Image (cartoon, rainbow, N blue to C red; front, side, top):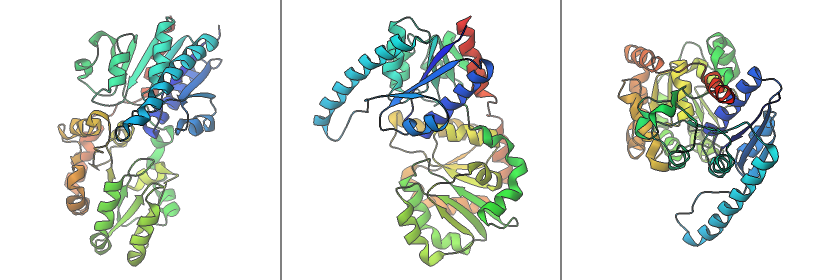
Length: 365
């Protein structure tokens, strides 16, 4: 019997990478399985999913516009249209199970699946559950989570601790350090700070680095700085007078596996996928949670690590003043780097995609 699955959600790399990892894990177990993605039109998944070899259908759904309330008439109309289209997709494709990974499209898709009696599985990536997943949880058969203590949001008997799936190319970084130093043109004898703000960049982190360029230039460290496409021009302009082989500025790091392999310290937002990667790779990290996310969930993600002494957190509003100074203080403290590395590794959940695939397949039986 040929099994069929729908995976729905997206919006950011943090939703898309896990979704594709789950699809790959299902295909590994059930090579004949047919997998369809359902995403939001105009969002990142509409390009990334086909590039990974899977078909995707888009719904005309978006978030509420908090600044221009009049636009929400159109948003609500598109939500109703998305609910109708989602039901048509479920009826036509006839999936055996539907998996929601978060993001706008997952709500209408999983609602439609439940209405037709199709079993649904939620993958909640954050330590603070979003409103959509809390609503969808009532009908879900399984809820795969990445943090302990999620019974405060979901029914305890549905929860399975699986962790968040991460990009597979990250698991062999230990053997890649020589290649990485050559790839980036950096010096193996110097410490390296990796600065990332997610796939689109992070304004505050970028402004903090720009403000600290003089201090970074004086320090005997190397910096790989991923700015995101919206901030690269500003960053290049700011670094003109600090040009040095020790400072590599790019809008996007195409080989994040290589960047991680030589990073002695990472500066990052506190998105769920990023944290899962850092845990598995045992990387010391300074987290700067984004304040512009639903329910301030990045702060909750970061605090879950800080409470276990597994990361340093600097609030977004304090970053411009303290981030670079803290990074330079930490990078020369080998004992502290080692302690953070050991503690963050204790929080790693391995083989997450395979464990989620197992839960989905159990439902079929």
